[in-house]
Length: 87
Image 1 (tube, one colour):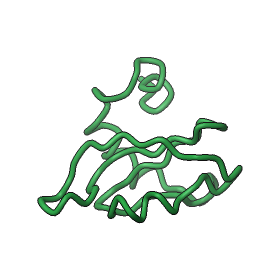
Image 2: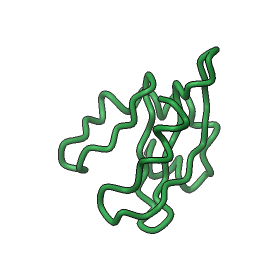
Image 3: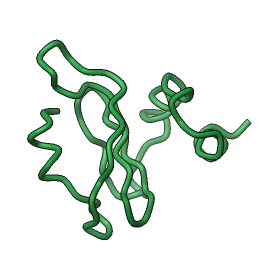
């Protein structure tokens, strides 16, 4: 995902600005893995293989997102890890 494309995105639920954490980039500077977080509702949207997963909650598939969250769990605050990766 290019950084220029990122500037065009907003939260699909409340149209608020998105904050980004970049975890991995390609050699050309494109974002390969990261996390978008809504500044208002705090929903989180992973970027997996350069694609932001911004589907409505009921259409998101945990088996697709779980490996991403497990891989990058050390990047999340403790309270977020407890929500995303319950024991």
